[in-house]
Length: 297
Length: 155
Image (cartoon, rainbow over all chains, first blue to last red; front, side, top):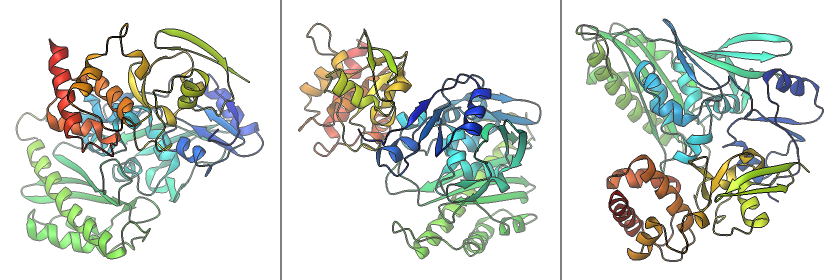
């Protein structure tokens, strides 16, 4: 047997799952798609006393768009986020980021809630959630609360979730018309943990940045959101601006050295990816500008 | 021990298992279906790919319990009365394997691809197989085999 023994629970509703989390003694792990946890169990890096599987609970999957928000159920798979026409239309950054996760069979099972709750510092969706100003809804027997993505990730594999809480919904505010987004990452092979990933969200009006957000994964113990990027507002769109901001943002963080890439390499990669994503997001913003008929993509 | 019940290659099976039993162990050790291989154990190599309810799954990265009530197809379920599935035949014909270790996973992934996209180009095939690692062939003949199988299966 690969994993160490555990007691398996597969509650059929959220209430029962929350009760298990509140009442079980010992080390308890929640599993959604299991694509990170299962290898950790097999390697015996993780040896919980209890495994609580969320797979039978209804109502935790799916995407739903309102006038102002996209709501995503935590058990929605990466593959659904990658391919859903709704997500691709209203939140293309999420789809683009999800497409970089693992391989297709992994994306068929892995879930957004699992990725956010695990909080791997190289993961794509935690970064996307921070850059897109997502709100995390968590639930426990004690009640429900809402946590901004910016406060959700504490450090590597550590989140705002208390031991009795379950992430039950992720809500993304819709982007205003004329906003462009882009995601890019560098890894040695497709599907590997990325070395650096960058997400950019920009609004452009009359050739100048009206808004700008840049975030990176793989450079810190949690998703990194640049404050320098805000200085883009009012600046003209062009190569000079892109080069200057790439330098400024790359100087803003202290990259880790995890044996896969050194500090200088990570900065170099970050600069290149910032230039690439800003340019692409800018082109997409221009294409999406609400001068014509509005709808794009 | 809890009981797990699933349909494997069209036959319903039921066994009492330890909850920590991986799907791939269940298939190999409980059912004796050793065509599904264990390569890396950690979802990187794709040798263990099977279909669960119609989608490709790395069987080393799911518990048998999680396939409870599901329809599972393994490499042993592809041939029909001793006649190779067109994908298996194409791998044989176009030398899409050397040592054969990755082959069951390659074939299962490729069958899944053609179900979704009956006429994939080379880029699509290579992208689809990112999660299947072969140490021998350099992939060239695998891609060729899949393209021929696609043509064959489109009729």
